Image 1 (cartoon, one colour):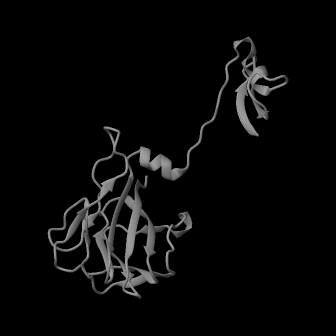
Image 2 (tube, one colour; image 1 turned 90 degrees about the horizontal axis):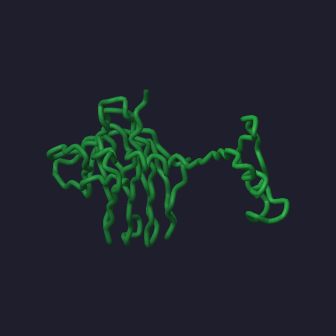
Image 3 (tube, one colour; image 1 turned 180 degrees about the vertical axis):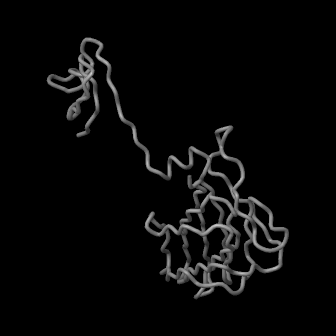
Length: 203
């Protein structure tokens, strides 16, 4: 069953329950379309889907067969804030840590951040984040290099094989601040860290 929004012959909005197939006896669709009446519909999409289409969704990742994982970047000094979702998976047990106000390592080991809208001409272009350390490239992150200092603001144990994080695990990051994401590879096995974020202007 679904509910659709329609206008009747007088222009008044009405809501109809759709329970059967089009053209069947007593089906609401048959009533809606008679006499060429205007039919209005309300289409919704979740916020993550919407932000991908708007060119505001970005992703990056790192993985290893042994040793800890690191991603480090500085958020832009603008009113565009970074809404981050984290996904960790491992062959064995591992733990995720997020640190705020860190000092990036000096090595310029960078990865380009990808805009998830690959089709639209106005896809929003490069990410505004700045790779920690090295050349501090806009639109990239530093990976595989340990950071130091800062304050740990999030910690979570990941059991073997777990992964996938719903929206309630989102972190809204402060502007003009360097963040470090670390995966402690507890059992020294295959593991990976995926970051997805949305760069949303605050008006």
